[in-house]
Image 1 (cartoon, rainbow, N blue to C red):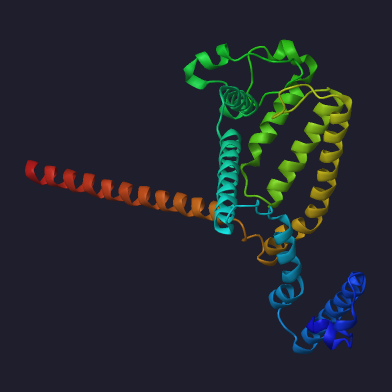
Image 2 (cartoon, rainbow, N blue to C red):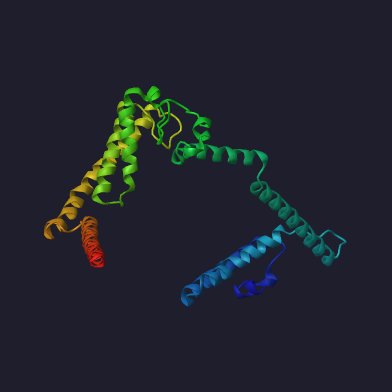
Length: 303
């Protein structure tokens, strides 16, 4: 009613059929209030939380009131509220129990999951088995191991390599030696040359001999073989570009220092040899003097 009076509507002149007019006046009044609130927010530069509370909290309150069930006739309001609160608590308890059950189902490992994990571990051990060698002095490692496929290459030699690889065995042996030559410090000239030689041998084994290199445990198809070749060829081009500026850096200090740079090991060995030779000379001279002194003492006693 105050909204109608403020709008200039004669309340006493309204009849029972003028409900639509009341709704229009109320809607116009609420729209004007919302416009005033938005203008006030723009003027006051309020925070986002305050803006959300002023703009949307009335709508949320009305939505909550619409969702609440109506109180049955003849029941006290307090009893209805207690029943509504109890139903909400029951609903939340059921929801919590459902979430706990879903959490346990997703986190607990079943026997099937454990079996799959064990199978993955065994597969990984087979793929990394080439790092463990052929068994050494154990004797049972090479006998227990089985060659999965004749096209699979191993890092360590096997007794039947000659029968399995045939003409590719010399290339394979050189590849194994090149693999062991990577013990040099990385990104040095020696390491780059060894890596380049290793990649060239791998390209030959994959492209010409159609072999599969570790850590793969199954023969490659044509698509996978082409991808592996492309990766190694790209790596070769990158290594050769790196050698172009690494090689001058390697030889420049030797030229500037007239070859003395990088010969620390040989100089140390040479000094050690000179020390040992000088020590041998001193010991031999001392032994000669000692023998002469002994002979002189023996002659004087005889006289």
